[in-house]
Amino acid sequence: MTEYGEAAERLMGKALITGDGQMLKDIKMLMDTRDAAREEGRIEGIGALEDMVWQFAYKNDKGQIHTGGLSVLENAFDVLDWDEPHNAPDSMLCDEPGCKQFISCGFPTESGYRRTCGKHYVVAERLKEKGK
Image 1 (tube, helix red, strand yellow):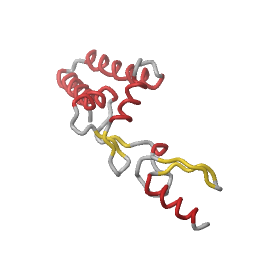
Image 2 (cartoon, one colour):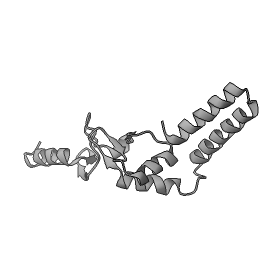
Image 3 (cartoon, helix red, strand yellow):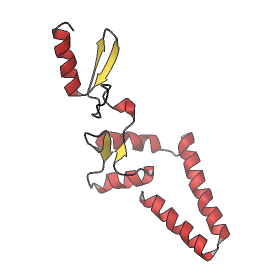
Image 4 (cartoon, one colour):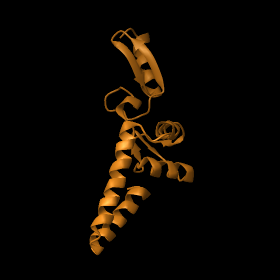
């Protein structure tokens, strides 16, 4: 859970313990407002921040990104309310079934356009050379 989520849970816990119904309503309203704004794209810069995180975060071979301990990326993950590691959408991963590597190549085939990792690009090229 992110720092934002942990803080919200702590405040909710305090509101429940003290019986402060208004505080609980206010916290829920803030969380709902932030979530709605994110979904509607009203939070300025969120899209740009996501793009930068996808570009600069560390990628692993499980289809995930992580901060690598860099505070600027840790802060970005908090703003985005992302857990670490964060799973990449399938559209960013190799189209070879079962492969969780990030896309690094794209090429046309007889059956359509492929987007693969480097390893599966080499495999496809070898099969193409052999006429398969």
